[in-house]
Image 1 (cartoon, one colour):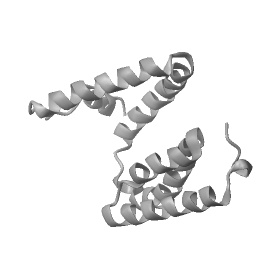
Image 2 (image 1 turned 30 degrees about the vertical axis):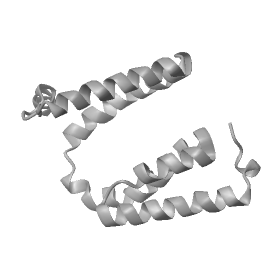
Image 3 (image 1 turned 45 degrees about the horizontal axis):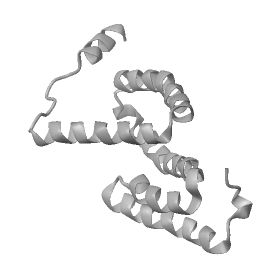
Image 4 (image 1 turned 180 degrees about the vertical axis):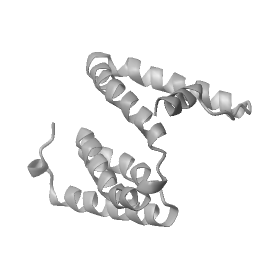
Length: 138
């Protein structure tokens, strides 16, 4: 893993400018900061870019959560958080254990399949069954 102390000044300056540009995009559109930051920061910082982007986006989103907490559908968010707590460690384990070429191919196939499904015009129009069941529990 790359240490922040082994990075030259030009890289540090660029790594500071890129989030500023991403902040402007996020401020204008309301989203997209991570999409703007991820490619150039990944080129500059390598794997270190992922936690940097996660921290920056979390800090940027925190005030929004405070302002909108009364509008959040906590039953839906609760199910998502529960699923994330189970599946994120499994995903990290898969990223560590599986050959990167296999992961790239699996991601590419998944994106292509779902892009084709969307191009064929399929859209989900209903309320998920698990949400109705989760509402009954809460």
